[in-house]
Amino acid sequence: MSATALLEIEGLSKSFGGVVAVDNCTMTIREGSVVGLIGPNGAGKSSVIDLVSGFERPTSGSVRFAGINVVGKRPDQISRLGMIRTFQTPREWRDLSVIDNVRVGRSDLERESLWRSLTSARRLRHLDTIETEEIRELMTHYRLDDIRNDRAVGLSGGQKRLLEFARIAAAKPRLTILDEPMGGVNPVLGERIGEAIRELKKAGSTVVVVEHNLPFIEKTCDEVVVMDLGSVIAQGRFDELRDNKRVVDAYLGNDDE
Amino acid sequence: MLQYWTAILTEATIFGVLALGIDMIWGWAGDFDLSAYAYFALGVYMTIILTVGKAKSPVEYVLGWRLPYLLAVVIAVVVVVAFASIIGAIALRNLRDVYFSITTLGAVWAIYYMVENFTPLFNGYNGVFGLFDPMGGGLSYNTYHYYFFGFCLLVLFLVYLVVQRLSRSPFGRMVRAVRDDERAASVYGRNVFWTKYRTYLCGAGLAGLSGGLFAAYIGAFSPLDWKPTEIFVLYAAILVGGRGNPRGVVLGSFIVYVGFVEMTRYIPSPAARPELGPALRQILIGVLIILMLKFRPSGLLPERLGTDGTNARRTWRDRLWRATVVADSHPDDELVDTTGGVET
Image (cartoon, rainbow over all chains, first blue to last red; front, side, top):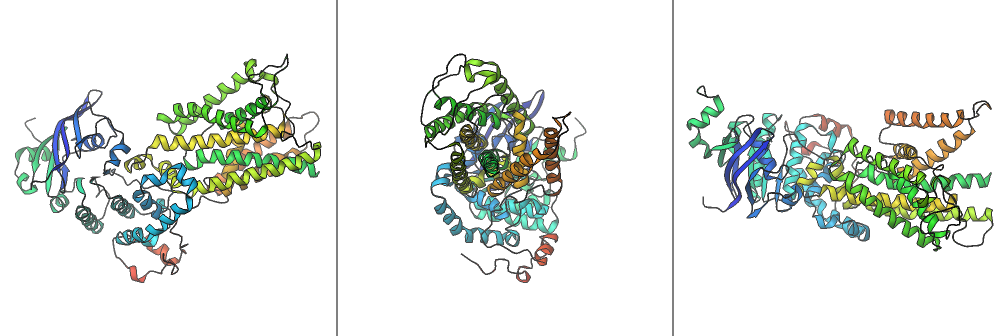
C-alpha cells in the first residue's frame, strides 16, 4: 500500500461570504487507488472538487497534483496536467455527434491550432480517420457504436453517462474525479458504471468518486474519505469506518449537537 | 435591368462574406455579437480613407493616404482586427450570453455616435467619398460593375473555402465543443477564452474584409449608410441558411438580400406615406426570422454533424435502439450494420 501520493490537499479552506464550505480540509490520494469521497449533503465534497479542479479559488491551503501546486491555475491548465473531472449532471457537447464528443476527448491539443487547421487540413483529417477504428472500439465497449453519428443531445440519461466514460477513457487521464456518477442511473447501468471505474483503474488512472450510494462505494473503492462540515473526519478502508462513531454521527445526525 | 441585378448580387456577395464572419462568432462559438456591423463599417471607412488621398477642406478625415486598393483592404482588415481585439478582450473575458451581447451593443453604438459626431475622424455626418474603380482598370462605369461583381464572387468563394476548411477541422470541432459546454471543454484542457477570442478575431477580420469590398462597391460612406441594427438582417440570413454551416450561410445571404431586402423594394407605397415600403420590409424580415425559428430552427442547410464518414443510415431498428434503455440488454448482433460495410 505504499504508492506515491498523486493528489495532496492540505489545510484547504473556502468560504463564500460568511459560509464556510470547506474548512481546513486535508487528504492524500495515492496513485493507482480508487477512493470514495462520501459525506452528508453540504459536507463540502463538491466544493473540494471545484477547488482541486480550478473552478474555484481556495481562501487558503494548498493543492498539489503530481507534485505541482495547482492553486491559482485555470481548469484547462490543471486538466492538461492529467486530471479530468465530471459534474453531477452529464455534460455532453450537445450539438456534436457522439463520435465527435469522444474525438474531442481524445485529440491532442496541438492539432487544434488555427494555423495547422488551415494549412494541413488533409493531414489532420487523415489522422482522424486513422483513429476512427480505435475510437469505435471504445464506443462499442461503451455501447455507443450504433448511435455514434447521432447528435449527443438526443441520448438518454444513461447513454450520456456512458459517453462521459468513453470520453474519459479516450483522454487517458492520470486522475479522474467523478461527481456522483450514479445520479439518476438504474441498477443495471450502475453495474456497468462500477465496471467502467474498475476499467479506468486498470488503464492506469487514479479515481476519486463522490457518491451517496454506499453499497456502490463499498464494492468499488479501495479506500474511503469521509467529510462532514467542510473537513475530513475519517479516511480508511470502508469496513474499518463502518463502526467509526464520528462517521455514523455525521450520517445519522448527532443529537448532542 | 442587368445592371440592377448585378448590383443586387454584388451586394449579396459582399454581405455573404460578412455573414460568414458573423457565423463564426455566433454559429461556431455561440457568442451573439452585435458589434460586427461596426467592424464592417470600420473596414469601409478605412479602405476609403486609405485610397482617396488627402482630405480637402471643408472635408476632413484622418490619414488620407493614396494606397493601392488591395493594400488598403489588407491594412483595413488589420486595423479592424486590432480594434476587435480590444472589444473582444473586454466582452469575452467573463461575459456570456445576453451580457456579452449587451456589451457589444454598447460598443457598436459608442462607435456609431463617435463616427457621426467626431468630424476629424471620418468627416462625421457627411462621411467620406471618392472611391471608384479602385483597381485602376480605366473601365467604363458599366463594365466596371460587372468586373467588380466577378471580383467579389471570387473573394466570397475563396473566403468560403477557407471557412469551410476551418469549420471541418479539429479547430472548428473544438470551437463548437466550447460553445456547447465550456465547463466541460475546460475540463478537457481547452482554454475557453482563447478559443472564443481567436474565433472572434477571425470573424471580425472577415467583417473588415467585406467592408473593404463594400467600400469599392458604394464609393462613399457616411452614417446615413449604416445603422448598427442592420446586423439583424445578417442574423436573418444566417438563420435562414443554417447556423454553423458555411454553405448554408452563403445561401441564406443570397436568399435574404436578393429575396427580401431587394424584392421588397417593389412594395408600392402610397405617395402620402413613402415610408410604408421600407417599414414593411423590416416587418417582413422580422416575420421571416420568427417563421424560421418556429419551423426550421437549424436553417435550410443545418450544421454538419461530424461523423466517422460512413454515413450511417437511420433505420427503424436504430430508432428502436435509441428508445430502449441502453443497459437493459445488449443486442449488438441483432442490430443492422449501419456502417454500410465501410471500414477504414
